[in-house]
Amino acid sequence: MVGTSTSFEQAHAPCGKTVDGTRHREDDDQGLVIDDLLYACGCRRTRHEYHDGSVRSMVVRHDGRVLADELDAGE
Image (cartoon, rainbow, N blue to C red; front, side, top):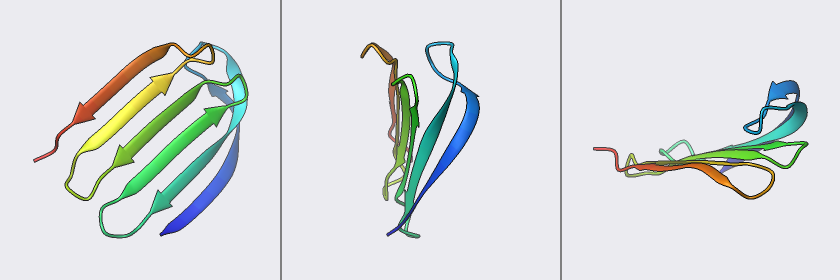
């Protein structure tokens, strides 16, 4: 699995603040994709695509409040 981490600047976080952060992405070239964003304020967004085509997306504010938690079962 190939993983990369990159920094980003001045992005709109789920809490409404504009902050810097990091993005970590992994891909196994067979359908598994992990995409995680962590903002400097502590908020995070995750999106995981699985081999069976299902996708799980989650948005969590820096205080721990879950703003979205969705599972798309795919085909």
